Image (cartoon, rainbow, N blue to C red; front, side):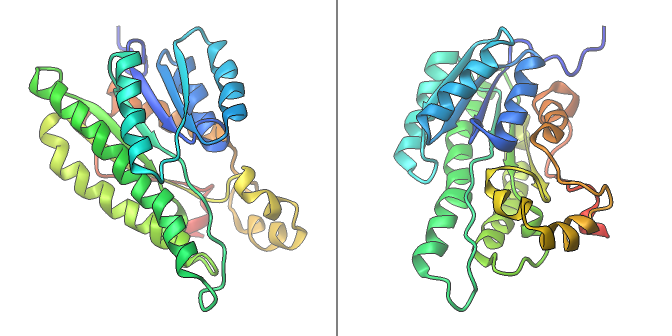
Length: 258
Protein backbone atom coordinates (compact mmCIF):
# COMPACT_ATOMS: atom_id res chain seq x y z
CA UNK A 1 0.00 0.00 0.00
CA UNK A 2 1.46 3.34 -1.07
CA UNK A 3 1.16 5.73 1.87
CA UNK A 4 3.98 8.27 1.46
CA UNK A 5 2.21 10.96 3.47
CA UNK A 6 1.65 8.81 6.55
CA UNK A 7 3.80 10.35 9.29
CA UNK A 8 3.16 7.67 11.90
CA UNK A 9 6.33 7.10 13.91
CA UNK A 10 7.92 10.41 12.91
CA UNK A 11 8.63 13.30 15.25
CA UNK A 12 8.43 16.90 14.04
CA UNK A 13 9.68 20.03 15.77
CA UNK A 14 8.09 23.34 14.78
CA UNK A 15 9.64 26.54 16.11
CA UNK A 16 7.14 29.35 16.48
CA UNK A 17 4.57 26.57 16.44
CA UNK A 18 2.10 28.14 18.83
CA UNK A 19 0.33 30.33 16.26
CA UNK A 20 0.08 31.49 12.67
CA UNK A 21 1.81 29.49 9.95
CA UNK A 22 3.62 27.39 12.54
CA UNK A 23 0.45 26.16 14.20
CA UNK A 24 -1.19 25.59 10.81
CA UNK A 25 1.69 23.28 9.87
CA UNK A 26 1.81 21.60 13.27
CA UNK A 27 -1.88 20.72 13.06
CA UNK A 28 -1.44 19.15 9.64
CA UNK A 29 1.55 17.16 10.84
CA UNK A 30 -0.34 15.84 13.88
CA UNK A 31 -3.38 14.96 11.78
CA UNK A 32 -1.08 13.02 9.44
CA UNK A 33 0.26 10.91 12.29
CA UNK A 34 3.37 12.75 13.53
CA UNK A 35 4.27 13.39 17.14
CA UNK A 36 4.89 17.12 17.46
CA UNK A 37 7.09 19.40 19.56
CA UNK A 38 6.39 23.11 19.42
CA UNK A 39 8.56 25.98 20.58
CA UNK A 40 7.37 29.48 21.35
CA UNK A 41 8.21 32.34 23.67
CA UNK A 42 4.67 32.79 25.01
CA UNK A 43 3.80 30.13 27.59
CA UNK A 44 0.03 30.73 27.38
CA UNK A 45 0.04 30.35 23.61
CA UNK A 46 2.21 27.24 23.92
CA UNK A 47 -0.30 25.67 26.30
CA UNK A 48 -3.27 26.57 24.10
CA UNK A 49 -1.56 25.21 20.99
CA UNK A 50 -0.66 22.03 22.85
CA UNK A 51 -4.32 21.48 23.72
CA UNK A 52 -5.28 22.00 20.08
CA UNK A 53 -2.74 19.46 18.86
CA UNK A 54 -3.49 16.89 21.58
CA UNK A 55 -6.97 16.29 20.23
CA UNK A 56 -5.45 14.48 17.24
CA UNK A 57 -4.28 11.70 19.52
CA UNK A 58 -0.52 12.01 19.01
CA UNK A 59 2.24 12.82 21.48
CA UNK A 60 2.60 16.58 21.86
CA UNK A 61 5.12 18.64 23.80
CA UNK A 62 5.81 22.35 24.05
CA UNK A 63 8.73 24.35 25.40
CA UNK A 64 9.48 28.02 25.91
CA UNK A 65 12.43 28.71 23.63
CA UNK A 66 13.78 31.96 22.24
CA UNK A 67 15.56 30.83 19.08
CA UNK A 68 17.62 34.02 19.19
CA UNK A 69 19.44 32.52 22.17
CA UNK A 70 21.95 29.80 21.28
CA UNK A 71 21.90 28.13 24.70
CA UNK A 72 18.11 27.87 24.72
CA UNK A 73 18.13 26.27 21.27
CA UNK A 74 20.78 23.73 22.25
CA UNK A 75 18.93 22.85 25.44
CA UNK A 76 15.63 22.67 23.57
CA UNK A 77 16.92 20.21 20.96
CA UNK A 78 18.45 18.02 23.64
CA UNK A 79 15.20 18.05 25.61
CA UNK A 80 13.11 17.18 22.54
CA UNK A 81 15.33 14.21 21.68
CA UNK A 82 15.30 13.02 25.29
CA UNK A 83 11.51 13.24 25.50
CA UNK A 84 10.54 11.94 22.06
CA UNK A 85 13.49 9.66 21.33
CA UNK A 86 14.26 11.25 17.96
CA UNK A 87 13.57 14.17 15.65
CA UNK A 88 12.77 13.43 12.00
CA UNK A 89 11.68 16.86 10.78
CA UNK A 90 12.47 20.38 11.95
CA UNK A 91 10.50 23.34 10.67
CA UNK A 92 12.29 26.57 11.60
CA UNK A 93 9.34 28.92 11.50
CA UNK A 94 9.98 31.36 14.36
CA UNK A 95 10.54 34.89 13.11
CA UNK A 96 10.03 38.56 13.79
CA UNK A 97 9.51 41.62 11.61
CA UNK A 98 11.74 44.67 11.57
CA UNK A 99 9.73 47.37 9.84
CA UNK A 100 11.74 50.57 9.51
CA UNK A 101 12.89 53.15 7.02
CA UNK A 102 16.37 52.12 5.88
CA UNK A 103 18.10 55.46 6.63
CA UNK A 104 16.57 55.47 10.10
CA UNK A 105 17.14 51.78 10.89
CA UNK A 106 19.18 51.19 14.03
CA UNK A 107 21.95 48.66 14.33
CA UNK A 108 20.15 47.14 17.31
CA UNK A 109 17.02 46.50 15.24
CA UNK A 110 19.02 44.99 12.38
CA UNK A 111 20.85 42.64 14.74
CA UNK A 112 17.67 41.74 16.65
CA UNK A 113 15.91 40.64 13.45
CA UNK A 114 18.89 38.59 12.29
CA UNK A 115 19.32 36.96 15.71
CA UNK A 116 15.87 35.39 15.46
CA UNK A 117 15.35 35.01 11.71
CA UNK A 118 18.84 33.92 10.68
CA UNK A 119 20.87 32.88 13.72
CA UNK A 120 17.86 31.01 15.11
CA UNK A 121 17.60 28.90 11.97
CA UNK A 122 21.35 28.27 11.99
CA UNK A 123 21.42 27.09 15.60
CA UNK A 124 18.26 25.00 15.28
CA UNK A 125 19.42 23.26 12.11
CA UNK A 126 22.97 22.78 13.38
CA UNK A 127 21.84 21.00 16.54
CA UNK A 128 19.13 18.95 14.81
CA UNK A 129 21.59 18.14 12.04
CA UNK A 130 24.06 16.67 14.52
CA UNK A 131 21.34 14.33 15.77
CA UNK A 132 20.29 13.31 12.26
CA UNK A 133 23.91 12.70 11.17
CA UNK A 134 24.53 10.51 14.22
CA UNK A 135 21.43 8.48 13.38
CA UNK A 136 22.60 8.09 9.77
CA UNK A 137 25.96 6.78 10.92
CA UNK A 138 24.07 4.19 12.96
CA UNK A 139 22.19 3.04 9.88
CA UNK A 140 19.08 5.24 10.24
CA UNK A 141 19.62 7.81 7.49
CA UNK A 142 17.12 10.53 6.73
CA UNK A 143 15.64 13.72 8.05
CA UNK A 144 14.07 16.92 6.82
CA UNK A 145 15.07 20.49 7.64
CA UNK A 146 12.57 23.14 6.54
CA UNK A 147 13.12 26.88 6.90
CA UNK A 148 10.31 29.39 6.63
CA UNK A 149 11.79 32.27 4.66
CA UNK A 150 9.69 34.89 2.83
CA UNK A 151 9.11 36.38 -0.57
CA UNK A 152 10.82 39.42 1.03
CA UNK A 153 14.04 37.45 0.57
CA UNK A 154 13.38 37.17 -3.17
CA UNK A 155 12.12 40.63 -4.05
CA UNK A 156 12.55 44.21 -2.91
CA UNK A 157 10.36 45.08 0.06
CA UNK A 158 10.44 48.74 1.11
CA UNK A 159 11.11 49.42 4.80
CA UNK A 160 11.97 45.74 5.23
CA UNK A 161 15.72 45.70 4.63
CA UNK A 162 16.55 43.86 7.86
CA UNK A 163 13.75 41.34 7.44
CA UNK A 164 14.45 40.78 3.74
CA UNK A 165 18.19 40.41 4.35
CA UNK A 166 17.59 37.82 7.07
CA UNK A 167 15.26 35.80 4.87
CA UNK A 168 17.58 36.01 1.86
CA UNK A 169 20.39 34.68 4.03
CA UNK A 170 18.21 31.77 5.11
CA UNK A 171 17.49 30.85 1.50
CA UNK A 172 21.22 30.67 0.72
CA UNK A 173 22.07 28.84 3.94
CA UNK A 174 19.47 26.16 3.25
CA UNK A 175 20.92 25.44 -0.19
CA UNK A 176 24.40 25.01 1.31
CA UNK A 177 23.08 22.72 4.05
CA UNK A 178 21.18 20.65 1.48
CA UNK A 179 24.33 19.95 -0.53
CA UNK A 180 26.49 19.14 2.49
CA UNK A 181 24.07 16.89 4.36
CA UNK A 182 22.58 15.03 1.39
CA UNK A 183 25.09 12.20 1.88
CA UNK A 184 23.28 11.40 5.14
CA UNK A 185 19.87 11.31 3.49
CA UNK A 186 19.01 14.68 5.08
CA UNK A 187 16.99 17.10 2.96
CA UNK A 188 16.94 20.86 3.44
CA UNK A 189 14.33 23.06 1.80
CA UNK A 190 12.81 26.47 2.36
CA UNK A 191 9.31 27.91 2.06
CA UNK A 192 8.74 31.51 1.04
CA UNK A 193 5.29 32.72 2.11
CA UNK A 194 3.73 35.79 0.58
CA UNK A 195 1.06 37.89 2.29
CA UNK A 196 -0.39 35.65 4.98
CA UNK A 197 -3.02 36.61 7.57
CA UNK A 198 -1.19 36.18 10.88
CA UNK A 199 -0.49 38.29 13.95
CA UNK A 200 2.57 39.73 12.19
CA UNK A 201 0.42 41.22 9.41
CA UNK A 202 -2.56 42.24 11.58
CA UNK A 203 -2.15 45.96 10.95
CA UNK A 204 -2.03 45.54 7.17
CA UNK A 205 -5.09 43.28 7.18
CA UNK A 206 -7.27 46.17 8.36
CA UNK A 207 -5.69 48.77 6.05
CA UNK A 208 -8.09 49.42 3.17
CA UNK A 209 -5.41 51.02 1.00
CA UNK A 210 -3.07 48.06 1.53
CA UNK A 211 -5.79 45.56 0.72
CA UNK A 212 -6.66 47.44 -2.45
CA UNK A 213 -3.14 48.05 -3.73
CA UNK A 214 -1.34 44.91 -2.53
CA UNK A 215 -3.80 42.10 -1.88
CA UNK A 216 -5.74 43.28 -4.92
CA UNK A 217 -2.67 42.31 -6.98
CA UNK A 218 -2.57 38.76 -5.64
CA UNK A 219 -3.87 36.63 -8.53
CA UNK A 220 -5.91 34.51 -6.09
CA UNK A 221 -7.44 37.75 -4.71
CA UNK A 222 -7.09 36.93 -1.03
CA UNK A 223 -4.76 36.77 1.94
CA UNK A 224 -3.09 33.44 2.53
CA UNK A 225 -3.98 31.54 5.70
CA UNK A 226 -1.98 29.28 8.05
CA UNK A 227 -3.99 26.33 6.74
CA UNK A 228 -2.51 26.92 3.29
CA UNK A 229 0.81 25.57 4.61
CA UNK A 230 -0.40 22.23 5.95
CA UNK A 231 0.09 20.35 2.71
CA UNK A 232 3.66 21.46 2.08
CA UNK A 233 4.58 20.74 5.71
CA UNK A 234 3.31 17.17 5.45
CA UNK A 235 5.00 16.67 2.08
CA UNK A 236 8.39 17.84 3.32
CA UNK A 237 8.13 15.80 6.54
CA UNK A 238 7.12 12.67 4.67
CA UNK A 239 8.90 10.05 2.61
CA UNK A 240 7.22 11.49 -0.46
CA UNK A 241 9.97 14.14 -0.51
CA UNK A 242 12.94 11.87 0.25
CA UNK A 243 14.71 12.90 -3.01
CA UNK A 244 13.59 16.53 -2.98
CA UNK A 245 16.16 18.91 -1.53
CA UNK A 246 17.72 22.38 -1.95
CA UNK A 247 14.44 23.84 -3.19
CA UNK A 248 12.38 26.93 -2.34
CA UNK A 249 8.61 26.63 -2.34
CA UNK A 250 6.90 29.96 -2.98
CA UNK A 251 3.40 30.02 -1.50
CA UNK A 252 1.93 33.41 -2.25
CA UNK A 253 -1.16 32.97 -4.42
CA UNK A 254 0.89 33.93 -7.49
CA UNK A 255 1.87 37.40 -6.23
CA UNK A 256 5.59 37.28 -6.93
CA UNK A 257 5.21 36.40 -10.63
CA UNK A 258 2.42 38.87 -11.39
